[in-house]
Length: 308
Image (tube, rainbow, N blue to C red):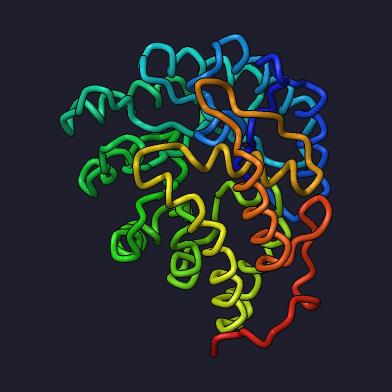
């Protein structure tokens, strides 16, 4: 699960809401949490806030789930510093993307990952071209895969062909994790061992149901669940297509609607207005079949719309 970062109305980090979110994930069918990723608004947080949030997660999880801390930063030195701090705090791994303000040449990209490897902490490479405007080449990943502490790739390119090419080339050597909800069904069907997405922040049971449907080869059911998830994604895409991080505002609004504390996004991002919240509520409850606190029972969801 990629965690959101809960803020109060005055903009301060809401520690009690963070604790509640962690406890919710501990009660849920997930194997890892990722604090400080894109959905966690890390670009709007100070370095001290990010350190303290990682420390809080490690302490409260207490080994019951894997903690994969987001330590990306536009300043490579800051990313390396935060990675060192996260390792000392006891995370299981970190997740990083390339600094992207300046487009990097392949040797420059590899230099960054090599410097990260020197820290000595297991790391997941996060490839998210829609955010970074940079798509890691297969040849660069080939070089990164030789590094001692590289453990997995989170692939968030929104292309089934792209994902399958990654899986075909590297799937037998390291985990290629599905990171784009728009095509998560196809990624799991192709053989992705896991998915790491934001919807699990408000309904891990829904995402687990889709994963398990694929694992038991109930593909009609898995596709039906993905069609329902797609209705949520369609709301985001109206804004995300312009470069707006709609996944932050919609995920936080979804959590609040379902009774999970999230708070507003940090300015300049604005919360959803009431008319859009009502549209979102209908999608969450009527289309996705979610209940209080994101509860979801696959066997209770009507199957009339199942696609076989």
